[in-house]
Image 1 (cartoon, rainbow, N blue to C red):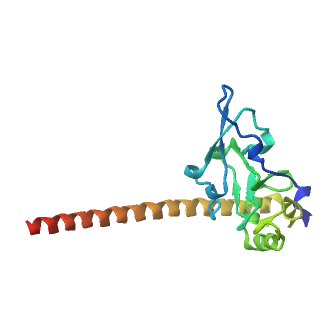
Image 2: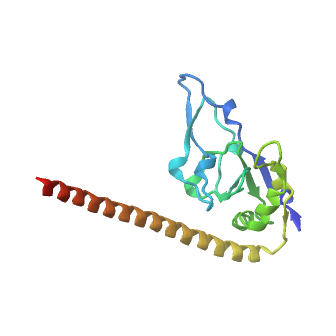
Image 3: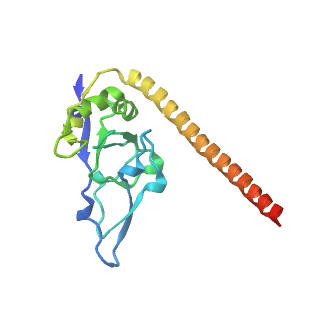
Length: 202
């Protein structure tokens, strides 16, 4: 076993209230901001739920998502997301921790799988802060014990997991499209029925 903080750098997110622009300024810088509602329980970022964020100073890189970062929420269900090319450059607020692994020890994609397992979530649940309902301290992630397996073994698990996530995302998109299709079809039938009923009264 190896502690996670021995194989990765773990940082808490930005306290955004301290950096948010107040009033009108010529030097406003615009960012996109992660938030809890934009992280769904399946480990995907919902782009349309991201927030806009304005500040008068550049945000330090430690608080900005980078490719292959793992961002994990500090509140239940402690969902982890893996940052891809589409989601770099986002501000990470203090509701999350960001984990940047030493890739010679832990492959980010493998850790992404591990953090989303029920076993790890239950372990985190035991460390919930009693003063903040459903919240764990960042140290809870740092002290996680990670099983030592070879990088090749990690890659095998990661590849299967990423494939499953891709397929599930496509199925989820298909499900939404089907739901919309049938809703439109039913609405159309209802309109035609109402129109027919109104014409029969004339």
